[in-house]
Image (cartoon, rainbow, N blue to C red; front, side, top):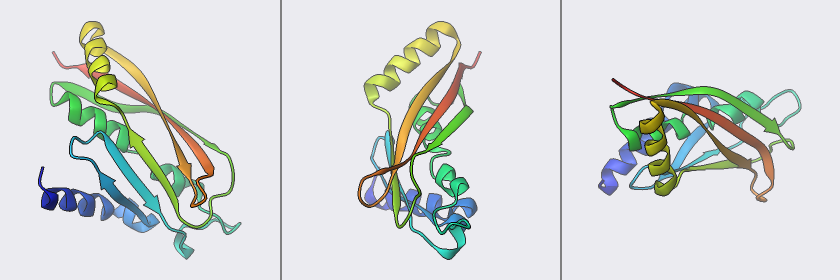
Length: 150
């Protein structure tokens, strides 16, 4: 993938209306689509009544990326969906918050082998939303459903 193609993907995701409205930006993605870095700055429109990041925006930061990674790795022969999600708020989010979503190629290959053998399964992935002091603001756990198409 060229640098220009990478910039287009970053721009397209960052301009996705729910992300644009919450001030969420995709900052970086690696060339094999196994690592995404997302950031959200504090704005008047993504604050709650306590002056901290709105919890829905913190969750929205994490919504699609594990699915993106798994879908890209497995290809069109598989159905990949978010099945469930959990967010555990650890401390108020202030300023700029960031999250990294990453699944190793080894883990993806293991997931593919497992899905091929079982036909379908669910997999759990976790990430942390961190503030500019690298303190954990929230922990997000996603359950991803994978099914091999017939």
